[in-house]
Length: 324
Ligand code: DGY
Image (cartoon, rainbow, N blue to C red; front, side):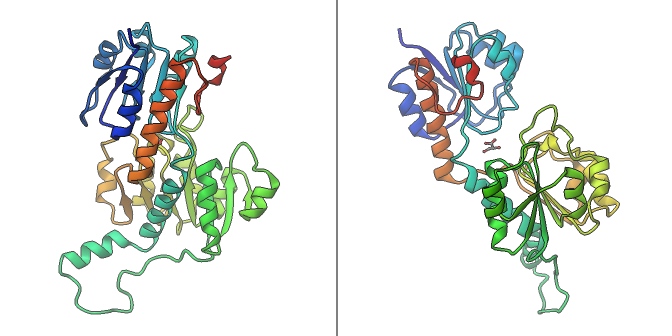
């Protein structure tokens, strides 16, 4: 009998083709999100699951899937999966880094520029028919050229964001537990500094850390207070990296100039305070939303699912210790 693989939500079709060559595929081809109880039920006889960042794969769900050998997520972030629980059961977890790096860095810059130059407000103004003439002070925003960019988390995406800053003649600071190799830091003209110093000196602070217990609310009241009153916070990583109520309060009090957010603490809910603020640009978690990129992510997850179930090494194991 063919191994059984659950695909929890709609994916690009290539992924289903890859999986159907080898497995009996239980495909939930819709945009609805399964809750933990439904996932547990559908996983009862599955050897593999191709999931998304919306799927709650906690210890209990994993515990109720006795035959499960691989969890392949269509995302680089895997905070929705209890990886230690999977590892304890020798279940391989895979993700899809690399293919989304440039798209996410592009979106980060689009968001940074849109926030600094107030693009959504300008477009709303025009569409509302309020544009009467050119005025010297109409919808003026903040400078980007020559300013200081602080990159928090200097992995693939953080580095790609820093590389783009070269074109804007920016000074780049980065904070990361691991300093980058000297040659790379030189190429990107990026200086390794402690987070507090980065927050004090940056005009734009852009977050690129994975969500872990150590990075939950990495940016809270104390960190927001350290930022310049003229600075902007950009987040395309994970919502809970920022203490959202603290950010709303800081923006309301004018402790910083604005924020560009693609991710939120309780997606798809957005803090009502954010919706009220004029100096905030809000996007619905679209960092990697480029058709070709998402298609590659789906195919990559499907291929890694196949690899594990065929006893081969997957391309992107999150817990390689399970592979021995
Ligand atoms: C990820 O991959 O983790 C993003 O949030 C979605 O592309």
